[in-house]
Length: 104
Image 1 (cartoon, helix red, strand yellow):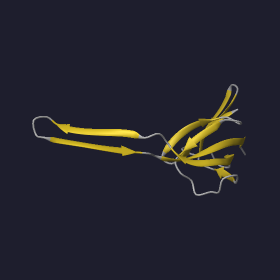
Image 2 (spheres, one colour):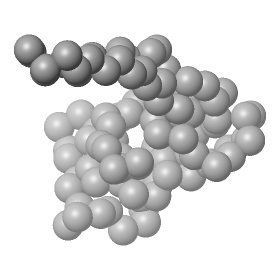
Image 3 (cartoon, rainbow, N blue to C red):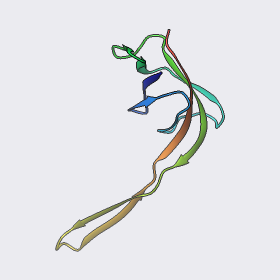
């Protein structure tokens, strides 16, 4: 069984037992959360697609940890203008462990 969920402006395909890094969620590490924006649920040959969301469907997950991703380096330069700029960015994330998928 798998599901497609929406969180943090992105869509993810999840299965029970999978670990997933999403945009930062306000929840303590070790707590249970329910993701209720489920777009699709597939179980073998049967597929249920929402318009846009499935009513009554939810995905239960456990918050494993919070962290920051690897640094992405940004370098801007204009040739012949003596302009160079270096920046970096580290995105915050929340790591989830998918426990169960339920469809009503």
